[in-house]
Image (cartoon, rainbow, N blue to C red; front, side, top):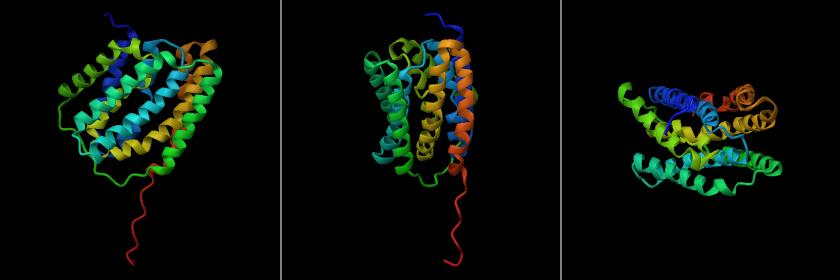
Length: 247
């Protein structure tokens, strides 16, 4: 198998993003770095297919992956590595099964956008997370980076099976789940905010790509994504009010 330019960029840049995230201690910084759609952008270029209903559906699988790891590890007591493996395998398995059957009409795309935003609103409303301890990796870079690149390389090998689902696969999230194993709730808490910003980005790319091409459309999508993400995560970054001493 020969790697194209965007495959190599995906390996190097997303590997670097995941490695950087693992060396940040505070859960909120981890969540912020995780929210940047660098993997999606590079994976979309590597896959080369237009943004469609599959990409929107993949956002919901990403949300399910994040909560799957949290529930398996925090609720059932399963060790973090099996929790990640099972959740990632579930993402890939569902993606492979769904991809050939995803409707690709304009009506289906916009209905998927509305449904995904509704799921994000519901998740944001019902899920809150307590303060969690931070964690910073003790593995050296020369071990961490090859591990991340290896995971992404395996994903590249099956990108033909996943199609658009590959673009939302938690390439950074797999390592982030391990490094944020003491703060999985913070990662899950940030996911609806990511979805709120990502759906408009995907919609803009979908509309612009026929005239501009995929690359320029993705750049335009970033210009929509960043301003939308900032206010959505503002409440997540507000410090909690300390209890009154008179109480």
